[in-house]
Image (cartoon, rainbow, N blue to C red; front, side):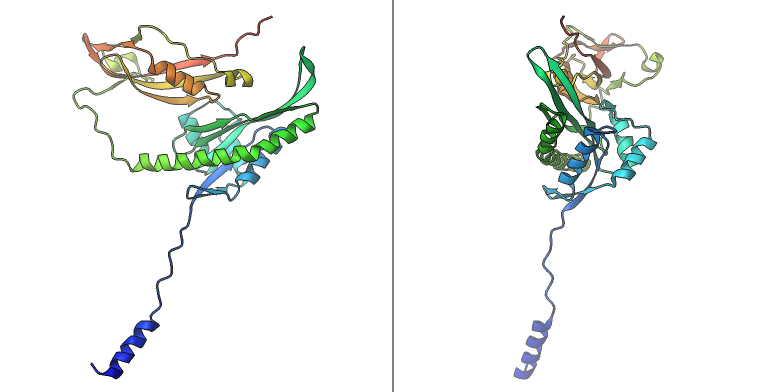
Length: 303
């Protein structure tokens, strides 16, 4: 190779365009903020949350809010009326109708309060729920509240809390997104082929399960009605899908109708601590799946 040709090769090499540096693009999560009431605090609270969440980024994801008017119309079109006590399928259907990955819903009000211990005052609160459209799970709930001598001041104090609440909700969305991705990519678990679980939770005729005697608890453990639920005066139903082994021990608890306010965790804890007389088929213990339902009502106030 001559000296001249070497210079030509070097010049060609230097003139080649270099690859552009890789720019990381955060994943986009579509988030819908639904109604929390028809007037007053119920209108302004979700607006404040929307401002705090719009365009926010955390954990490699960026929030893209859906159009509020279109989301509201889609939710009403599928019959949603603001329930904070939903089954997984109801939450998935709502999320699919709105066209989002996660949705925020709740209830926000400003109420006049009175007691024997203090003069009349006002309380503003916002019960904020975030659910996944993919799984239908409730991934976080909060209930910030504020009290003041006037309704305007109480609401102002509440709205000031929602920016911090939005940051926590965003963290929950990022964690849920990562968890759902891991679950989606995880290989299916191989169950015990010799002991298939008999599903007694489905609404089927009893004859479909043959001569299966359902399990029965040796001692019923009543889930606690939480302080958070008491403050919210919540009344709700929590359903749990429970797998019980042939030894009568609870192996899996999944909340399939959630209520928030700590009631879901209360149910899961109580069920996990319950020991059952095993289900039987033909006199032999068998593993089963059952649906357990717990109804929570406000305790009666003592006179």
